[in-house]
Image (cartoon, rainbow over all chains, first blue to last red; front, side, top):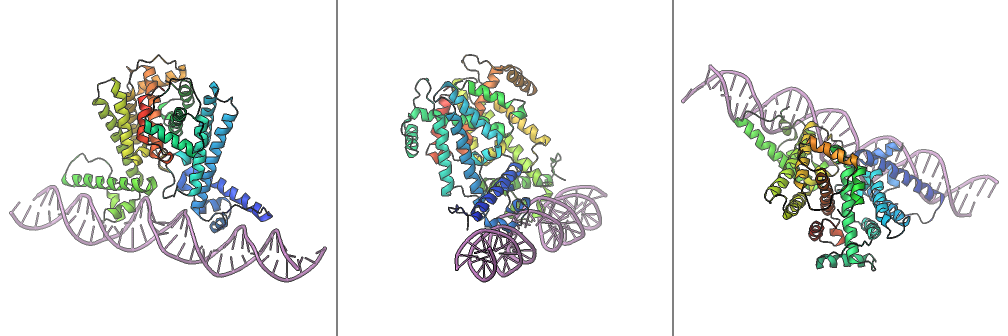
Length: 225
Length: 225
DNA sequence: TGTACATCAGTGAACGCGCGTTCACTGATGTAC
DNA sequence: TGTACATCAGTGAACGCGCGTTCACTGATGTAC
């Protein structure tokens, strides 16, 4: 019923918003502990010292709550990247470095939320809801825009089809003044960051005795190797 | 009880092995459909037209079955890479290409199994069992060995600590005649392959309108960009 | 300012469901004499 | 070759558990007169 945002900000509405927040925080705690399917309406209620059905005053159902978590994570992640990019002189040598660092830091600090965005989603959960798609697209715009750092490298020759697809995507996202090759570079950079970060998150480097931080630094320092 | 491998290969033993296999295949089907936690003893039994408790003749419990699946996946994945490497003239220009292709092909064909290896594992599942660790280490040896392709690039200067860690890992895996820088290169290549493949698997490129195959080809064709 | 009423947060019981696992058992099947 | 016995695959009932969700309800709390 009542998952609509409260436009009128009466006393009760502010109370509602506050509780919604507490529920979400408890859900994130469970996510961090036991993975996505550990998020349980009843368990959250118990954690908040309240009966299970009480939560249905604040979220229409479990899926509604999960959607909220994902949407929040997208926004949070995008904001972190944006902020890192804004702190740095645009297009400077350190820009990529700063953004890469922000990317990793966010993921390392909240691996479960990072997984929520880029790893296997909730089982039996519909990831095609309008809200979700919108949130995802917005975050991806920020991510790729921020990673679109022109470098002095020789021009890459892209297959026409790929170039077309990139142009189409850029158009749909309002990034019209972007070189196609730069957009391509941004996508590639993203895949590299994700590769490093997602393997680190699952403990793959640690189990090999490699220091993830150092590995990341080396990989980022000479991105062209 | 009876999860030990049958050394004596009597009639009943072969029967057992056959059923064990059918159970695993059903489990993989459920994994493909509903994710890791959709693998249910009772559901598998139903699919095989048998009562739930019957399966306890073949696996001591659910975790035992899961372990089996993961171990199999590691072996299978490693075999695919090994085979691709063996089909190619060693160290040749096409070697990396062939292995990258094999890597992607395996992952694309069985994304759920690929996730089993490199994405978030089963919730509440102990991934530290001896069998599992052994299987994982063996597969990683193959993966990195196969990716250890010397190239003509200028020497990379690695931080001492990272170099030490790499040497130690190589030693523990019996890869003594490997240059440290080449091992480093292999790790980096792995992170790039994983980045591309894991993002493709979750549909991230498709949702941007990008052809994953073409993107992969471009990324692999100019790995130094 | 004081009172009456409508709103709504939260409760407890109940629903049907599926899970992993145990237990005592039946009955077929391979094996040993 | 024929019979007796031990093995063992599979059954059905039962265990305790937790899940999401509904329902009719109580009682406090904000609001309107």
